[in-house]
Image: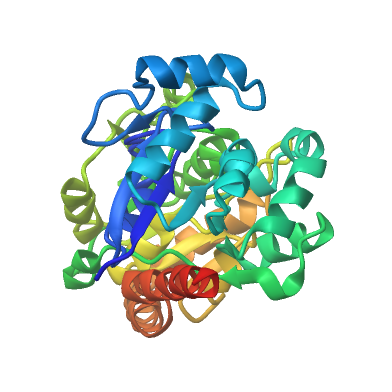
Length: 367
């Protein structure tokens, strides 16, 4: 009989969080709680704060929990939840009091900002240590993130590095490697540094005037990037696509020569975990041109499956884009090597199996 797993997520359907949606495919009876660090809604039902008269009376007499905590306690009892998977560190902190009270094992999955932004690491310093102590396993998506959480006080034997994995459909892509189109997929935020990708591409157009760059996504830096394109006279070379479905991104990948992303550490410390789009691009057999940043060097091997440069080195990134344009056979060899490595080491199936193992062991330990 399948065990009951509650997934706690601060949001329900963030388009950039495909990895959380993938976790709903874990081999358990999934109870998906969302809406806030301390979730207030259960997918498929109304608001979880549904109390009988006597429960309200009991709550007034019991000051130990907030009304939101009390609602979550009652819901987890009703659903007979046997383990909690908390998406993001702050979510785990908010839920800790509840799961401790119910003696439910918890697995915590860190993703990016929650293990990099300076203020988050500072504000949650003591809460994280309590979460580390209680949790059965701490899942991280890169070796860099593992190192950060060890420094934050997590026991090394609790840390499990498990890179997400692209949707299997990307392995069916068949790029032709005969275009001059580069593709970037990601939110327009500081850690993705779209302006640096544009700055590198501007140098490329000086030599290859027919080259194009397609940018997928939206975010706070999109208006500034649009202005930069106009000021640089690149309106004929740069296309802003906005949000695109996975199917639409697959089509764009088939028509592209390489995937580009100049990831950097933002001024506030925010950094990538391991970008899903980079995994998808490699599964689609596109060479990746990116940076030595966070988990990217874990999945992209420089000069074997892609071309990496130091953060902020726009000239080197432009040189790598030019290298691919001048040698299409290099694009193909890097792309094919990348697909092979992702298929062997970083599939979605491997990620889900790893996560499933940790959850099953946590449930068994309780019995």
